[in-house]
Length: 257
Image (tube, rainbow, N blue to C red):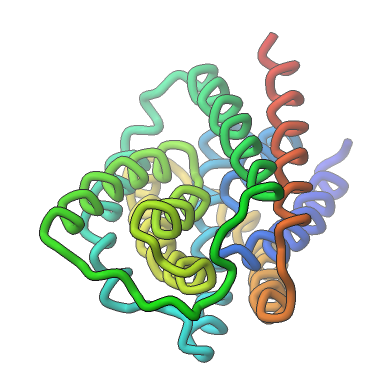
C-alpha cells in the first residue's frame, strides 16, 4: 500500500470511528492508535496522533452534548486534576517504553474493552436521565482523583482518550445516568487528550500533516455522531464495536508473534 492509499484509508476509517464512538461519550482513541499502527505508522506517531484526534472528537461532540444540557460541569472538573497530571506523564515518558510492550498493552486493552462493550448488549441498566444526580462526598472525590490519574497515565501512554473507562466508572460506580456520563466524559477527555499531547510534544515529534488531514475527518465524524446519539439506543452498535476491537487486537497480536 503506497503513502496516498494509506492516508486515504486513515481518513475514511477515522471518520467512521469518530462518528460511531462519539455516540457513546468516547473519543475513539482505543481504536485510532491500533488502526494507525496497522496501517504502518510508528507506535509513537500513532499514539500522539490519536490523542489529537481524541481532542478534536471530544470538543466537537462535547459541544453538542453541552447545548443539550447533558454535561455535569462540576462532576467533570473533579476528574481534571488527576487526569491532566497522569496524561502528561504518560505522554512524556511514552518515548522510553519499548514499542513491543506498548503493543502488548494495546492487545490487552482492546480485549478487555471489547469484552466490556459486548457485555453491555445483555446488561440491563439505566438508559435515561430520569434519575437524580448522585450526592458527592469527600471519599467520592478521593476515589475520582485516584481513578482519573490512572486513566490519565493510560491515556498519555497509549494515545487513548479514556472515555471507554470514564463512562462505565461514572455510570456503574458513581451511579450517573448513561447519557449524562457520556456527555460529561467528552469534557474530561478533552483535558486528558490535551495534556497527553503536550507530554508527547515536549519529548518527541508530532506528525502535523497527518494530524491536520485526518483531524478534519474526525471533526466532521464526531459532530455528526454526537447529533445522531440523541436519537438512538446504541447497545447493538456497542456490541459490534466490541467485536471490532477484538479483530484489531488479533491483527496486532499476529504482527507481534
